Length: 142
Image (cartoon, rainbow, N blue to C red):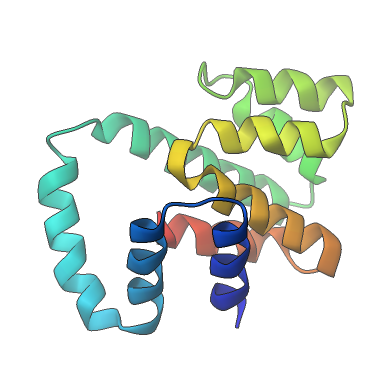
């Protein structure tokens, strides 16, 4: 159910159709995901693997801070303050700017996956759900 809602929100926020289809296949047809994952690994190793790894490290760091009991604002500041790609997110979170702006900056660092990141945090905020679970689901889809 969470995956359907996240995919729907990402579609509404402008995520590219091929990536939405791929994310849906990963979630609903796991054996296709294994075949697709091998293909993606072979293709993405030729491009920029470090950027994806950094993004996943940032997501993992944010979820770890949230699991330790920090607020989302503090977790964003702590997890992003040493990363040059997400440094603006840490500064904005520390300054107390509206979370919508902070999340928009965080999503901007994820390029095509940005709408999915923003939608998952927005859904967790509005529904009272767990931001940790939402971010872990996004990390699996990226």
